[in-house]
Length: 431
Image (cartoon, rainbow, N blue to C red; front, side, top):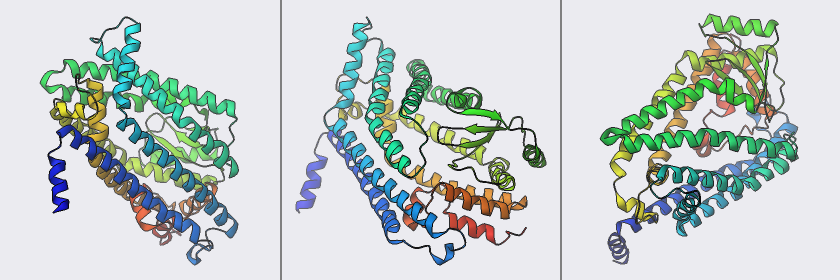
């Protein structure tokens, strides 16, 4: 009877309190689930202290131990940073951080002579302050990760000055994209009438296509050094392979990134492999490129875009239905006004969070399927043997731990575990 009485009392609460409580409860449920999964994987790091027999030909004991210690340090860092993030988010909600920041934004606008009727201007100030707060609170964690953990394990090659310069540059570039796009989106929603969700969706579609088009030529070079791949055997073989599958290759670059990232890319396609020590032979580079070209040839990129846009349309459609519900705004401290930007934040980030979790898991499962298909495509190109050895080298260079808890990997890994990929390639390694 006590439990049912508690449930009855909960349902008798005002709608805004039920919504707020449900959002907090779901947030902590997800956090505890993620922590449970992380602890399962951490147990693997702690207990698997010797190279398993099936890995004997893949990884030596020294590299295995380095990888184990690296992943242990990363899991410890993830635990504390994740706990901080969850507590910070909860305190912001409990103490009215969102309405406070909105009022502060209005105050700044007032100082500049803009009244409450300039909602879009106030929204842009809100976004600027929110992203600044996020950058500042995240900075100590980023510094520790880079200059303690990555430094300890030999991966960091940045100076503090370069790190700060890069962080400032990223923040400025983000604002240069975020603020104009947000102002136009809010304007479209304001003037779009009953079918504003269609216009908003079309606008975000155009923006995403434009960003994809200009990223390689105008955005990425702000952070990475692009050098054309020199003429020679490797470039010729890349061009031959691209031509054999009708891929429209126009440019090939070697990209030196902040963390020794190697890339080959062109106007319509990008290959990127996080590779902290560049030790692959030409044949192995071609094999990995064969895998990446497989994503293009098999239509994975197009399929992902279609899924993304279907999801975007659905979310804007549901947003159009929910934006008029005043109890949603009241749940987060907005009793007298319903700003459009705040509506987007509440609905997309909080109300849609259960749906987003399910969708994220489904996309992770789909991504692993695509990875196996791309491996199979490289195999058909006769690259199975070289891809096999390349995957081992890349895993070793990045100190990837080859043993995974099945539940952790199922929930988190967008790429199949190394052993599963190797087993799929092994049957025809001699092709």
